[in-house]
Length: 233
Image 1: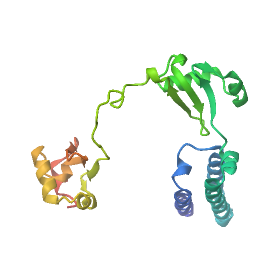
Image 2: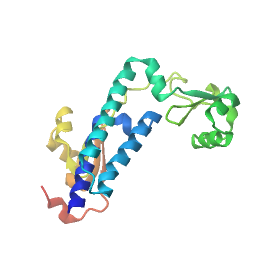
Image 3: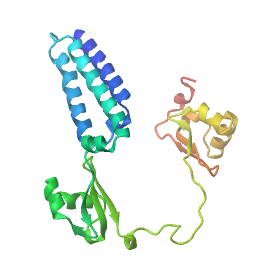
Image 4: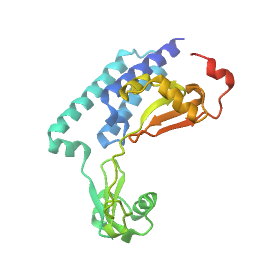
């Protein structure tokens, strides 16, 4: 039971710390974020492996690391120099279809790795690349040559209407009443739209949205049992 409680408490604490550190920490990690994440993982494991270690010996260092990460994140918003020192700078590795081998050597990055990343971007011919940039996170960003990019409505002088983001109304059978209110819609309206699609209850829907053009979309659940419609109502 002691191991169970220690694990539960450590999980809750680390989860809280990561939440406080923000979404940046769980995205593509910079070197600084990576070091912080590794150290937090190691410190969190110590009191779980050895019950003779008090919780404070792990919690205080973890909290300290989180505080340092948050402070440096705020400081890097104000200082370009500090941002570059902590996270590094993006590096151009391909320019106008030509591999910049000098930059590759400085980055200790080989051609095979570069080609593999380009293939992951659906680029087999390096001559199609205007710029390839190695980001601080280790990911490759690619800008294709303008004549090889997909044609857009703007290229054809075609006017398009605003799309916006569809508003979720039902997720996993649960009605999102707050979103219904924001869209100035009622539950009865929702039931009517479901009825048009042959769906008699929100619980028979796994996901439903309303887009900016007023079009209603619903995806019915495939594994629904009749008794599920009348549970937890």
